[in-house]
Amino acid sequence: MPTLRFAPTLEPSGRRVAQARGGVLALFVLMGACLATFLSRVPTIRDMLGVSSGRLALLIAAGAVGSLIALLVTGWAAARFGTRALLVWSSVTWAIAISLVGLSTEVSQLWLFSVGYFLVTFSMAFINVAINAEAATVERHLGKAVMSQFHGAFSIGMALSLAAGALASHAGVAPLWHFLAAAAVITTVRIAIVPLACLDGSAQPATASATLGGPFATAKAEYRDRRVILIGLIVFAASMTEMTAAQWMALTVVDDFGRPEAMGDIIYWVFVVAMVSVRWTGAPIIARLGRVVSLRVSAVLVVAGLLVFALAPSFAWVPLGAVLWGLGAALGVPIAFSAAADDPTRAAARVSAVASFSTVAGLLVPQLIGFLAEVVPLRDALLVVSLASVTSFVLARAVRVDAPLFGSQRLARRRAERAALAADEAGTGYAAYIGDDSAGGPAAGDRDR
Image (cartoon, rainbow, N blue to C red; front, top):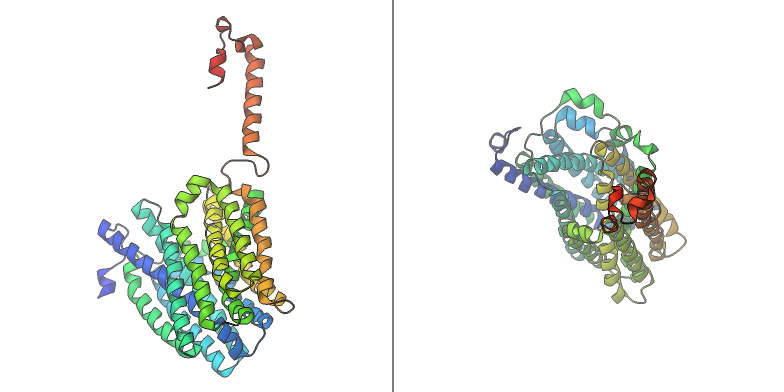
């Protein structure tokens, strides 16, 4: 049996680690497919429920509370029951939840949609924590940084699922049957892969009590650090940029450009592909430009994409806007999380702290865009995201390593050099610095090294 063949182990062989790496990559693909299954049918869901964009935003935000509640207990559950069990249970819960969402569109019951979407976000939070834990385990055994590849696989899963959603929409398949089919396929494959992906995944009940409260409990001391708060605001802005595209781009194509749902899915697919392309090559880009410049270039690209998308005189400009938006949205979150983890002694708490900003963005952004869409066209409402990009641009210096939060880093170095020189002059006498070797000081040529 697969479970016996891939039994939990704390000392895996190189071959077993390679197998787990493939399994975790597959789990990330499936998680991306889970998220995009819902996103690919948002316009149809809105119409079948008979609600406005603002009302849909409220329903989505209410459902997203599930992820917030789950976040408080996911660490405890992973320790108490183990990631293997967590992945199986959450997979089944997601299958039931997405089926309830599909059923709600058939019977036009808003309460059923809220319950279903609450369970969707609740189960997705558990899936997210469990597979990221397994990804970190694989990365540790490999001894090299491969986390970005796992998150790239997530985006690939989104792209594939969006394509499936576009085909289902074009063929006139109702969300209920689409979601039932997706639930059956994704859940079956995921449960089969879990034993392969989990090297250990066993319960650790001794540490369970310390993980209650989620990132908010872990990070409460970090909220007093100004740098952490500024990085958190960058994460909020970056998450807002990505979430807004995920939830509203396809609907904008349908409402404001008069295109079918399948075309909305294709445009969002273009956005995802652009984002994935940059994430796969993100490490050399950041190494070449540095964090601050990379973050600011990303912000400029997002604003450019938003302006093209929102102010496009014709639909022909929309794909270009989606590409620019996707290119700009790719690196904000990775850069911010890397910056939060700079201090290894405080990395876990700081990452938890900035992650909570992303959770809050998920609760606020849908409502904000939805309410604005009640008074202006939806594509005009999307321009509010440009404010988030301006925030990232202004606060970009917060992601520098061991540097002042504000002010020029070059100027700070010059001031430090002048201070050191003044201190040396005060200690050895000015004559030591005019080339008088007999005074025991360095020669003039040595000062410039």
